[in-house]
Length: 370
Length: 128
Image (cartoon, rainbow over all chains, first blue to last red; front, side):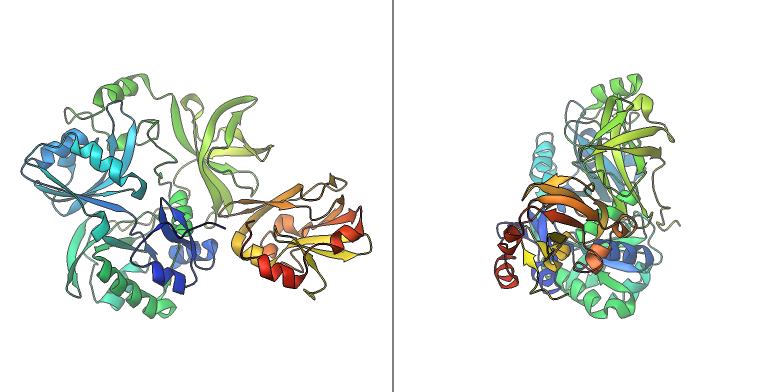
């Protein structure tokens, strides 16, 4: 059993305990891995609507006349692709092109951006930004004063309308809007990690309680269930979404992690560019692939991958996939072998299990397209 | 299943001893902790196990868990139903979800394991 007393708690901690959540350590935060069953919660989100406490996420505000120019230099993505009220996925790299974090960039205006970052990386991200930050740009770490509730699944739009009285049918995917909840202004984006339609509510801690309680009270009669971060992980894995610390980390470049789409070489200078453009020319030596196992055993992070007798890589994420009905995962392997249909073997508890490279995502993505 | 008739380990296995045959499974407490069992790597019949030796692995969505031999003995039977229905361990930990049977070297060793009352007293304090 894990010791969780020393961990940080989100505003919803007492709610998780009262709901019978199994509390574990997520990047230093005490959060529920499940309430009753990861598989049940996973399938519920694919069918209906699940709510998740993701208040451990970090939020950093970037404001000032040079905000856009600064972020163009500091992040890999070309922010000219994103208009006001929209968001975009980017990487934050060090000078050697290695990935410090993956980030969702919310653009309010050319002078105001909001970065949503991984919980485990908040302090390092802030420092990596600060070192390049010009005087006229202000960085504010708002992580401690910001809570986040994710509402995910095909019935999310309806659930938000019925439970909170907020109409989001005209909000496009990867766009956000402001809405009043109680006396607080909530920022709501149409986004998430599960491959389903859904929303993320960025609110003050007190408002997170209001939002959470309203959803929990409406409950299953409105198609809503609280879900733990275990289901969030299996859902993101099926959707083929990378997770920092698994598919990429500070030893890998975005190109090696298959995230080249978020690296823009035609925007001019940015931190890490020289090494990344060299790697792009030569081609990365390893790549992330999706795989499916021949049996239902589970290939977990770090397990070795073989082609014949030769070790060619390692598993980065793996799980039984409830919506696929099979054991799947992602692995980092030599790029010459990264071909759909390629047969590999993964060593699981000293036993070789057959695996095949398959296309990602593992399930059809059902984000709202407008 | 009369849970008072069983004996228990601090690693959350139960033992049902009949003569020299010990049927082994995991407790309801353990299946709740493990949750969502998706695969079971059963031991091979005929394998000789020492007490507290890792006998097999239960995989859940969350993690892999070693299951230990409560007493020394030789594996005589495994629950073949678990190959296609590993979730039986969650649904019926004391009946349909049993794991394997041992021909025990020393039945008295099994009698010396924890009683239900003793197990209930320690189960929340010990890890799996």
